[in-house]
Image 1 (cartoon, one colour):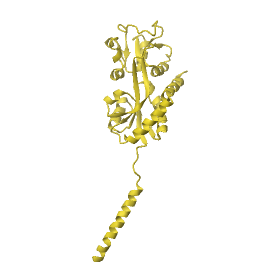
Image 2 (cartoon, one colour):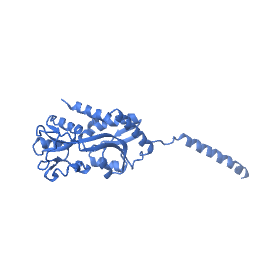
Image 3 (tube, helix red, strand yellow):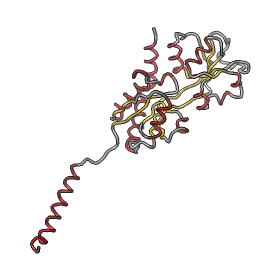
Image 4 (cartoon, helix red, strand yellow):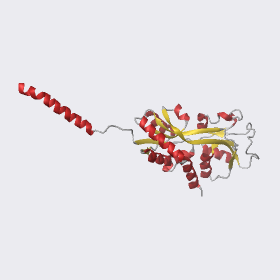
Length: 263
């Protein structure tokens, strides 16, 4: 027994050295480099259909610039994507607007990568002066739920009667309503609207008032319930966005998308 006790400190010391050596072999966790994202925009331009949407392409540019991997998660609906994002199962939301913060605990990464500019669009040649806003009361506006939720119509409420307008499911249906004579005008960003017009083969059917009264920033957002949302990743994404903005990547991707839809 005395001999065993003499060796006890030595054995304990060897055990501690072995434990420390084992811990040294375990790499120190770093910021997440494999990010799960959803590309679900409220406008057609930001869809992820077959990986060809603007957001799908933007995610590849962003991943390359930030030195991370972004895996786009296919979801069946906006609501399904929102639930996954809010719970932290999805780390990143592409094409995030401010209204996302009303539905999920999220962090918008600065700077915004796109500035949507909304104008009023009418059937071609129905207005004689595109610089002067006509009397909107008595004219039928067409809109969709996301526009109400985002507050995009608010600056025009004093001039139009929304209750006399037509509510449809999305922007493409709004364009179709004007083409069918069921509505007189809609509010839209020119780049986003052009994709709907091309899909309907109606590129020359609508024209916009020159005035831009409503603008909206589009961001990359991280779920605050994501294990990957840490200062290191936030810094990587912010720096990457600044570089992409310098090269006007979002604008070029939209223009490329437009060109691909032309006959």
